[in-house]
Image 1 (cartoon, rainbow, N blue to C red):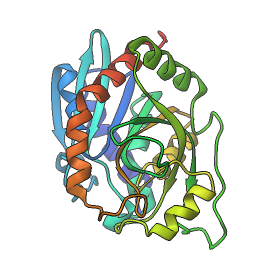
Image 2: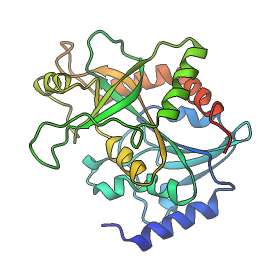
Image 3: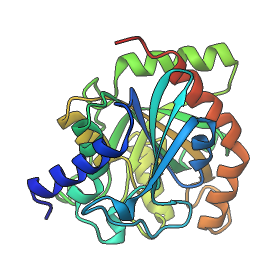
Image 4: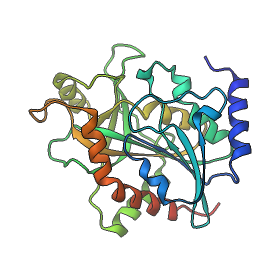
Length: 268
């Protein structure tokens, strides 16, 4: 259980390291860390140098913060996230969001690699998260409900993202992200149920971070990279290497989208 003093110490370490308050912070999902190379005047700090900050153990998560600029806009990118299935308590999974808020950042973009639940979509598509559901069953056995609304999914950031997509003439999806505990992929039966409940994509992250962002009253946007079809949609097994490979294939498109969104953020 993280204590408030520990969160304060971690926040102070980042505030002293970062040369400016980031206008936006981006959490980069599996295989999506290439975006950080788009930044200029970069500086990097390993999670191991931040007090009380664990190191991620999943491939594709470097475990470092990157500060840099897009033009004159200060940006903070988290290359590597913490997952509940790694054994971290929820409050530790949410720690990066708390730290972003603590240093004064008001806009957060949370990204992930996700399994596609809709068989009519294509692998490599990017999906704006317009709502989410908690399929972890940590809070009880009842069917999860879809959660929407500006507290968890900023209408302003969604509109900015839609404008960026339109200007770039990019194929894009919008849908509901379902969070499962992991670390095992979902069964075909679970995927049928997630789709019945309204889910469009499924993964093992993001929802705890969306909740923390709402509690911190941040403007938050979620984006999924659909790196594989979910279990049972195709007659083939799932593996993390496929997730990483698709992430590499779409990394330029993904980076262009993030740059387009950040360039369109309004002046404070």
